Length: 300
Image 1 (cartoon, helix red, strand yellow):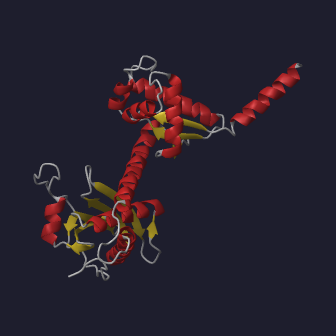
Image 2 (cartoon, one colour):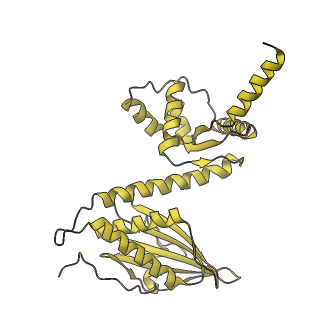
């Protein structure tokens, strides 16, 4: 083969490499990294060095025009995966197979050249959102039918959750809104976050994925009629003034809290029950009343 032919083959392979995507699963924290060190074939002994090497690899692939999908490497899930498929977890090819699996089914982001210190928090947020979605969807799937009317509880609950969110955002009006919905549906409880921006005179801006997860979590609370609540934090004006409001889930609809209830809920440590000092420049206001639609599953 002539040198020209060899060069042509090499050039073609390099171009083809750009069309074959890659996947990487990252051990995001020190605890997960230590869990993997028990495997003899795991080649790293320092988490910081591991992250530096991973970032160097990702940058190299990006410089070659290769699209790389990033996911989280969960040692506990990896151990279960290997047990289910009768794989030896102490082999690089097993780790590679697991990486391909989580790239297909887990929370992922596309690497675009940013530092891992910037990317990993976003990836953890994405993983939390997917876990909330999976949990809430499973809760709704188990809700079954109303014993009195026979209607599917999940479908009705989701419709009510959509109506409740629409009313709530209309009531909050202009500003930047940060909403948190928490529902006591197992351990850990469901927790969904929604960011909404409503500049004066313009259309409300929502993230479609966040909205779907928020409504699904709220619907799970309605279907179970379990304790839960919604907290909104709205920023308005050039000075960035914040107003906090709250609602408790009452049956299958949010009940507006009064200002004292909002203050107590926001200024109490959820784990210890100890009081937390109120934030400077934050108003603790009553929740805005929302009008419930008829509840077909409530029978006197």
